[in-house]
Length: 125
Ligand SMILES: CC(C)(COP(=O)(O)OP(=O)(O)OC[C@H]1O[C@@H](n2cnc3c(N)ncnc32)[C@H](O)[C@@H]1OP(=O)(O)O)[C@@H](O)C(=O)NCCC(=O)NCCS
Image (cartoon, rainbow, N blue to C red; front, top):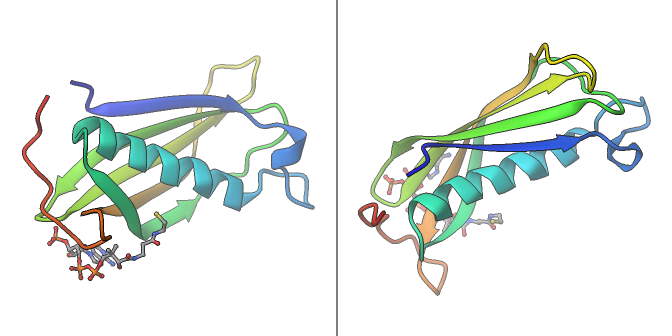
């Protein structure tokens, strides 16, 4: 059972904003998706929707060609909600030295087929 999920990608031209740095909305999409994956991999067969992004901070900007390394870890589980810590580290392609670029907490709620909050079941793996 993994307790931390990792994803790597490279910043491409289409991910940039008009300042030439990584568009924050693109990063937020990765973060939201990683938090979702952490939940559904931990609780297979359950549905989750994003409820909130908390304590979100963009520390340093990423640029064209940078490698983004995203880590997602389930930090807290409530009755119907999960809180996932997501951190994104950046490094230049030719240099493995990483810097923390983004840090935040994503709250997802487990919902039934009608979209109503339902209990997060016991881990079944
Ligand atoms: C997610 C949704 C079903 C929750 O319904 P709700 O009636 O607001 O939920 P509740 O007030 O019962 O709270 C549900 C859980 O979320 C937690 N929660 C709600 N708001 C929170 C916040 N801002 N921060 C942390 N936890 C929060 C509650 O504490 C509760 O957790 P628990 O059962 O583990 O104690 C509903 O708000 C919704 O459908 N929102 C839109 C979701 C969406 O479209 N997301 C984007 C696409 S995925």
